[in-house]
Length: 413
Image (cartoon, rainbow, N blue to C red; front, top):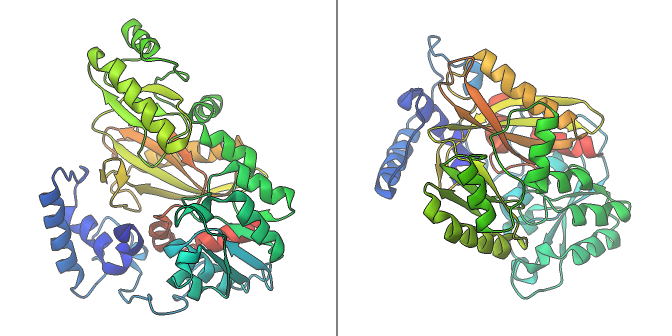
């Protein structure tokens, strides 16, 4: 999380591009190796930052950032394409249904647009930095745990109605992908900053998302519908409908949980039961499906912005191949040495998919890429859509100069 948010500010992005400088993904296989690399990166990051020479393969504009940090300031200097001059949100109230760093990030964007920001907090969080950072705050009713109030749809909706807010930004995590929460706000005539409830429901179900991709002629890996048992899964693998190695996934999962790789048929029954249990515990739904597992791939994601009426633009791609237990560790933007034709195919698929469901707001379309990024014919498949702003949105902001959170608020308004 820290690396994703501060990569450009610390010069780490410069370090990984110019010092690892290769087509292969950075393979962090052990904890000791990972820590050694990070220590070396931070030592280099302390040196004065300078843009690459004109002979670098990356555009100089990509490095046109400053190494100064802004943790103690209300705002950072405007990005080149900040929307601060737009008056659409002047005197509007924006409640932020989240806490921590992303709450502060949204409050900063709202402030830049002339809106009033309202933080929410559990009783335990009343002295947290995100509460002090906003213009005002609402203390939610306490729950069984410190995070329960942030998951209370009824309590959050009541708070929004009582404070007569105009917009609700959910951030990421918590209820950011909750169709019931979005619908509750729509029913209360409050603007939801994000995709409509039906789109959230669509991408919350990976089987439906795969079906949309197929209808949109976006390539997908061979897979199954939801499976009811390990025996049904074994039958698919035995008959060759899906080939080994394969991966079992929670249909309503995310965040790297509810996934199991299968390399041998003897593993299927126990692995299926384990995956089903984890899915039920983590997501409240035990539906599991099967896909072929691609090895030695890169993981690329395309950032999009859409207006809900068929207008969709992309902000290019991020390379998030470096992961630990399916959790992203380092993001690179743009992807190193990607062929322009391969990039065109990727972003075209992302835009087509978003148009196919009348997407609205910011989102990320994720792909697996198998082969050399410098090859225009390299094959790729659709993975999923994250219908919200992501932790790593700041990497794209630094690379493109576009304020994504401000764009979200203006699109919603």
